[in-house]
Length: 71
Image (tube, rainbow, N blue to C red):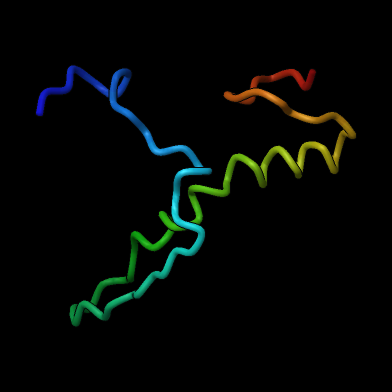
């Protein structure tokens, strides 16, 4: 497999992704704080942010990336 960079890497779209995500946090057995459990929430972040902007401003975001102006 060859890949020049992420610009030509096929990323799965949200409508192609599984409808259910199961996460199991496994104890690691060492005395350090747990980390790295925020990834499952990454997928719905953009729609949630767009809905929050709509709730605050009444303006819908229809394209990504989200810029400094709400159109």
